[in-house]
Picture 1 (cartoon, each protein chain N blue to C red):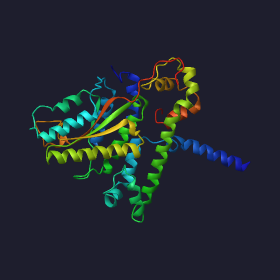
Picture 2 (cartoon, one colour; picture 1 turned 135 degrees about the horizontal axis):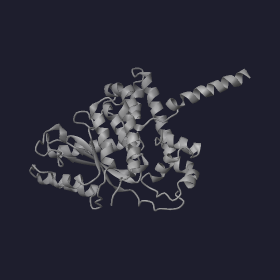
Picture 3 (spheres, rainbow over the protein chains, first blue to last red; picture 1 turned 60 degrees about the vertical axis):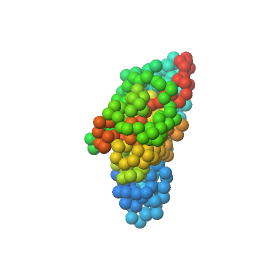
Picture 4 (cartoon, chains in turn blue, brown; picture 1 turned 30 degrees about the vertical axis):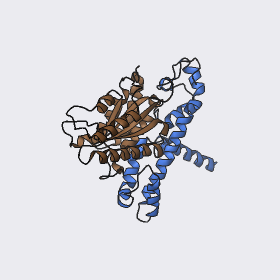
Length: 140
Length: 208
């Protein structure tokens, strides 16, 4: 019983922390976080590596005794968040197919029309759809 | 043909872009985000004849012919003016294509816009521009390398599909302010919307 209560408490806490920790970060926030945590090390040790080439991480790793641990933690968090966001974006229409059919039938697809309809119907769309739109970065 | 005319779409994109705006401190980034919103929610005309290959050839021809700098906008700049666009400052290491960390957030904001469904079916040209200091040929080469570096970052770090992006260095051939060729204002990155990736989906009773 006590165990259940504790588990419930942990769940509640996780739920409360949810909006801050579970939500994916925007790409802009992701870029800002890498710049803040890793920027000084990148400029100091990896000034010949460009961020898009993938060699920046290898370079940081090679200098890991001099690079703050926070940089590696935040870099990993950014990559996990981006992966989650991309997956949500790719899976959004599947997750929202039933809601779209129910509430947005006849909406002209393209240019985010369907998204606008789903967001306007957010009080009634299915929770899985709503969560996917949040993870995709398209809803709050 | 018009695009981005819907108020809702513009507002949704504004919300997406307001998030990084809230956390950014520098005035430059704020200006950039405003420009992203304005540029990508405006109504524009399509010009299917305007391709990266054509623009690249115009720039290469201008460099080869060593055409004198004009006080008017170049033909390339005039063509580009017609497209939906944003202009951003990306900080690079001196004489190099290494993007400085202070610009990572700006690149991310651009990716935020490109990942929004409003822009999903559109493709973009990333254009690097220099001022007129240095040789024309060097400027053309460096600006191409810088545009390549931005596309690479958008693709690998921020997961924008490579099919939607092309990099084009124009060196000093599309000066923003032709009357002040050496002004740093001419050093800039522009992103142009050059049309749809695929035909826009048709209306349907069962949208999927």
